[in-house]
Image (cartoon, rainbow, N blue to C red; front, side):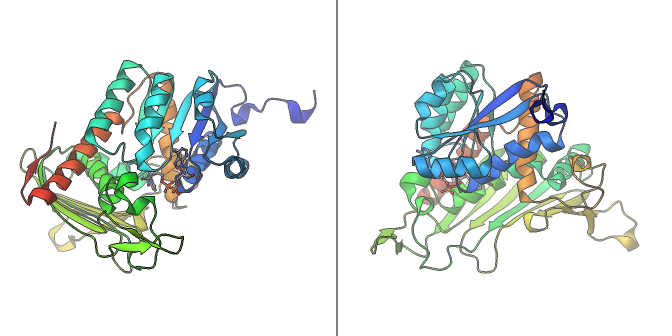
Length: 388
Ligand SMILES: NC(=O)c1ccc[n+]([C@@H]2O[C@H](COP(=O)([O-])OP(=O)(O)OC[C@H]3O[C@@H](n4cnc5c(N)ncnc54)[C@H](O)[C@@H]3O)[C@@H](O)[C@H]2O)c1
């Protein structure tokens, strides 16, 4: 046997294979494709992940993506992929309006599914997906990747340990500016039929999930306001297309137990690129995290000596911090793409040993319920209870 043909145990050559089919291959396809390929290289996993097939709508584009992202095959035939018993996991990274149909088909074919956020277009769809996943006894995950930055993991640990005491206030904002320019063309992200809502479903979905994950707080009721500043955009074919979703969406929240929160999502805040920022205040202290400085966690504690009190910045890339030891020596920071790798690592481990994985579709249902309640509140101009 030549050296080249020997199985490489260090690369997982002696492990059972886990074959991945990835549907969609643009922005999230690149992030997920990279994560499926990187996970075995940096983490000891119970499976050898095989990026098997990219599913797209155009054969040539899917083939190019498969080549670039390191998948073995490309196809436009999702049904054939779902009928293939060698495929174990279906990864859904297509626009929001297709999540339900693709996921339901994959679940019916008894595939494990990891789906992009928001889980669905409506609460009813999300519930249907969660119910079928349980019935089929397969594992599912939702790509709220910001749960898996080392610094947000540390924040969750500190809050669970009681470092902040009882949580009183949540301040969450996700600010971008790529739609501030009215000449940016319309896309599936500006059309209600394909995305459901604008900055709200896109960005507030992440804030809702992350603040729930960090604090354990559950929403009681919400009150929202939204605005569409640019009502028509170039359609890319010489005409214009109507924009029927929010550019900016803010809502107030009351949580069960008495805490309160503010949420703001916008794609028209000049200067803000990907400002995903969470500040949580408890009776004893506060934490603040901002994706744009994602390796840092700002921490304040009244327990610190009075004359030395103030927010301090913890560099969360020390060997003791979540995932850090699998990457680089202390202080050698990680980036956006690593959150997706961590998601893959935890999902694959959960798949193997049957342990819990979050966020799952039940979490997606809760996020959808909050999104929907806030939309209903904008319509009625009143506070709206979040559905159970
Ligand atoms: N987790 C995150 O941080 C994050 C970030 C961006 C987007 N997203 C979510 O990921 C999803 C995809 O967003 P994106 O930014 O990658 O979009 P995108 O427009 O960059 O890519 C969408 C891909 O899906 C393909 N596609 C569209 N309809 C399809 C269909 N019916 N069947 C097969 N392929 C189809 C397109 O050809 C393209 O490859 C959305 O739900 C979005 O909300 C999540």
